[in-house]
Length: 253
Image (cartoon, rainbow, N blue to C red; front, side, top):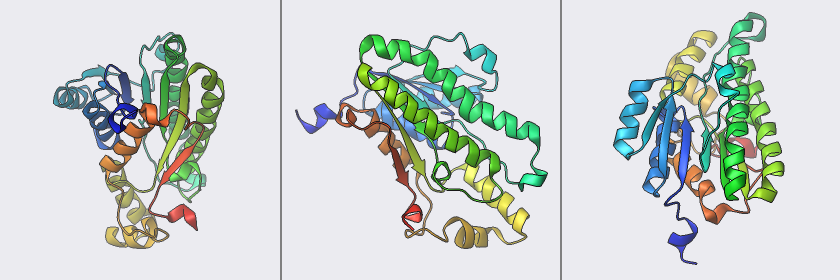
């Protein structure tokens, strides 16, 4: 089989959550470039439509915090990219309980419900790709990020169970674990960390975000998108239950 053949995704469909910007938009674009018809799902309907129009896909205005509405969902897609997420910086003693619950709903319960909704279609077609945008914080912890670290660790477990159940049906499930990616979410984190630690933002980047990284730069969203597209391809059919770090060597220590 040719290299183009093992990476061929023409005729496949995908849903990318949080697809209106950042990593999600990069994933949607990377999949579309390989022939996938992508549904860009986001609470930001205008942003979703903008990305969808750019890549020849579809927009889906979706509030993932309305988990009750997801319980009866039937999702006919070949590829599911669970990407939507938020961050909140605070020490545990000051962390708002309602914020903790909403972050669990967005980054654990919603992915579970979307996977649950998508698997019957994937099983029928004996092909499926579940790709969960985790984080290096799905494998390592940092202070002041209790909800995010907890949610991403839970997502890792969800991904592995999906891999074990989906394997006999041609469905793979993997996590992508970026370090700090050049997105608006990280820009906000930098500001939050600066406020929490009482230091300038450039010092947050050098002394906190990239302190342990061998490669001293932020990850590009397009780099994450490229890895996601490969994981979705036929070439990655034996890759499942894995967690792919893309952190500039931070977790190698």
